Length: 162
Image 1 (cartoon, rainbow, N blue to C red):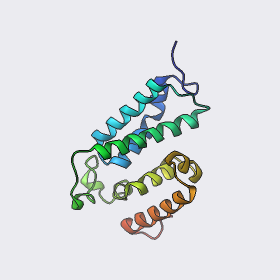
Image 2: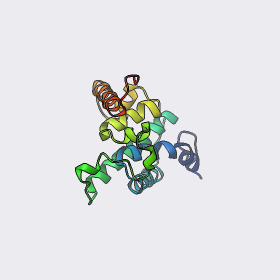
Image 3: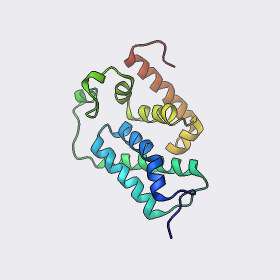
Image 4: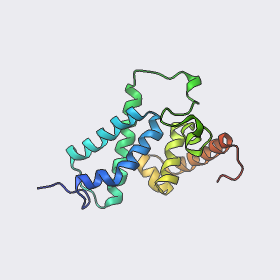
């Protein structure tokens, strides 16, 4: 008998949420190899733990929460360190010609700012939903989002961003 996750097969879940999980891991880790490891661990945990989900929104939130935890583990156990001056460089998976693009600038934000910007603008979550996913207070998320917008605006050099 095939396992079901909110009415979806395992393969359907992977196909449907692969992009969201991968993008979130890239936003957090800024490294494709580490993001792929976290992606794999996230879906392996889904397969081995078989949690019950009330609906697809619950499933997606669970996947993103597990992915963020995997990213935190990867950052904690990462044996190599980045010099401070290289932290502002463009990510290895982007072309140098894209250095001034919005995604490249987003990658230069602090990790906690990147993740709220990604969840809010790319995944379309509301502040309360982001708070639940990240295990934070809604006011904390509002503050992080405001600071992320300010940081992005400063780096992007425009007054039109909101």
